[in-house]
Length: 309
Image 1: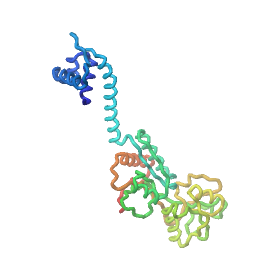
Image 2: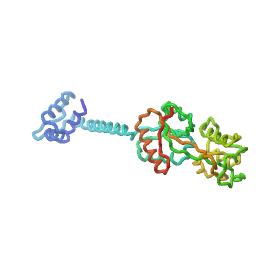
Image 3: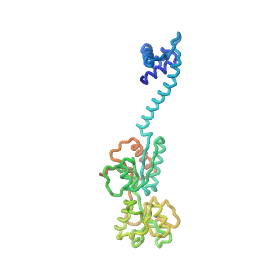
Image 4: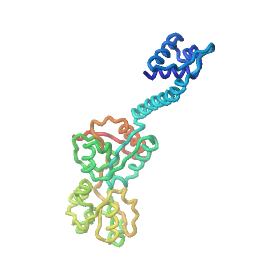
């Protein structure tokens, strides 16, 4: 039995007349009658009683009508589900992010834009540091990841640049330099730095260390913090000072001030990473929505892709 046989059966059952059913289906009446007879022979039961005005369903026909309607609905739903999946409108998307990237407003804007455009796609969010996220991408456990790549190259990864973000100095409010609007990094020589351990955030850690060395001093490493919010809290508790991405300044913790860096520009790079040969429609859709969300955020830098191998 094929689905078309059930469609023929349904048309005759609904019309109660083979000629009208044939017209509805756009086929000839004799071929439709032959198909119905063939279906009855295959099933070994009579489905219709022939009358002078048309046909009526037998008990066997009534039973088949219930299941035929369900089967045809299921078949139609299967087609619709496949079409939605083919357009990237269904399924699951796994998205990774570093703790520092989540502070940049363009990241939640991109996620929000995708969820609004594709509500049928489930989003799984996973936090990790850059090496962890790259490993999960490579293993296929993540589809995309927001991370800070620095100047490193990653084989088999395509990076879409999201932001080139300024860094800021964060000081205890009672620090002698806290009332300054801008400070050169050299003014921090001899200060105790509160940083996230390199194993946790290697890119951000290296960028801060490199900027200080270029300013002519080796940072004195003090208390370590597990994440950026903890860095701000420890600075507030006067464990030392730190340097953070500008977007972290939205953490308005009591007892700290954020100061711009004077002189040489100190920046950190934020990117969206995907596997080089990922052809998933869901991934492509997220990248499209990310581009639109970034434009709406008013960023001056267009999202660009580059292969780093």
